[in-house]
Length: 114
Length: 110
Image (cartoon, rainbow over all chains, first blue to last red; front, side, top):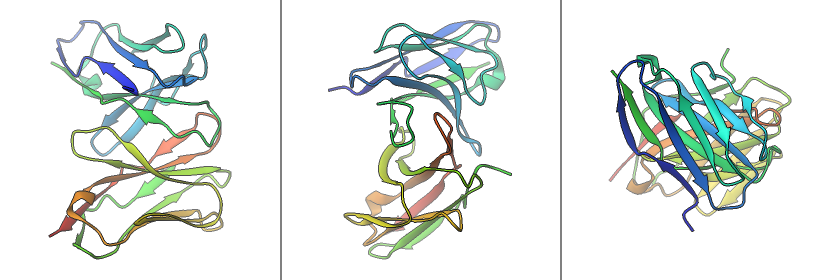
């Protein structure tokens, strides 16, 4: 039982390049999330998908797009990377969006944009 | 004002002591509260959740919630060096409004 799997683990991009971060969960969870974590800023929500077929913006969506491919998979795309997007990205999932559903996190992607 | 405030630390306690981690939040309508532990370079993992006022115990961990004071805390009894990590407080103020604090770094000294 892998839980939440993210790929890649590390990535270096040049400014203006694009890339997609992949995330898959095998816990049959309905909701999936993308967070970024920066020193001193804590975890901030980029986008979430409450259920298959829906996506919504979080706190810091600018510069990102997402796709909920199916119930298991939720990808995050950077169309034109900027140095400000250097961060650690975490995908997470939960049973649902109700307030008593804790998040389960993937291992993270460390992204550097030069 | 930040939604969730934590003292960033570092908090140092000797092995065997009680570590006390605190968190305040701004939204009085918050419904659920979580403590996550994050080891350096790793992802956050859930260690406690609490939804009603009072104490909730799980092994060496006790979460305490006081909604009137908008305060949630985590006590770690008999602290071990393996407890050294950053502890994140998370507060849910409604569907998908889960706000994280910046975390408190705990060091347990052998």
